[in-house]
Length: 179
Ligand code: IMP
Ligand code: MG
Image (cartoon, rainbow, N blue to C red; front, side, top):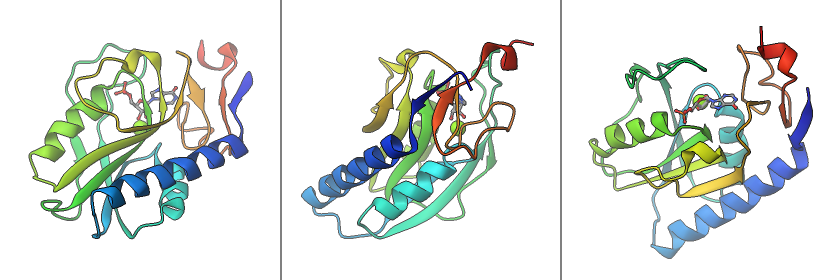
C-alpha cells in the first residue's frame, strides 16, 4: 500500500451522512414505499451493506453483474448484463449503489437500461468519483468522496480480485501493478 486515502472512520462517517441525506430527500417527496437498492457486483458490496444498514428506510436488495471492458484497455463501449435483476423494478423507487464512477461508461449505460424498465424513480449514489467522470450525461445524485485520478483499492475495490477486504481505501505501490 502506498498511502491511505480514506480511513475506515472517514468512510463510515461519510456513509452515515449520505444515508441521512438520502432518507431526508425521499421523505421530502413523500416516499413511503421500500427503496430498491441495486448494487453492481462485486466492488459495491461493502458500501451496500454499510449504506443499507445506515439508511433509516425499508429497503430491498438487488444485484447485477455487468461485463467489464477491462482496466487500462480502451473501451469498446459494449457492456453486457451477465446477471440481471431478480425482480421487475417497474413502479419501484430505485437507487443504484456504485463503488466508483471512473469514466462513467458503466453507470451511463446502466442508467438508460434501467429507465426502460419504468421505475417510479431512479437515483444513483456512488461512494467515490474520479475527475474523469465530470460532465456525464446522467446525474450522479450522491457522491461520498471525490478522488484524484489514481487507482485505488480496498473497501470492495480490487486490483486483480485482491485487496477488497481491506477496511480502508488506499493507493497501490506502482511496483504492484506496473508489471
Ligand atoms: P467506469 O465505467 O469507467 O466508470 O468504471 C467503473 C468500474 O471500474 C467501477 O465500478 C470499478 O469496478 C472499476 N474501477 C474504476 N476505477 C477503479 C479503481 O481505482 N480501483 C478499482 N476499481 C476501479
Ligand atoms: Mg464496480
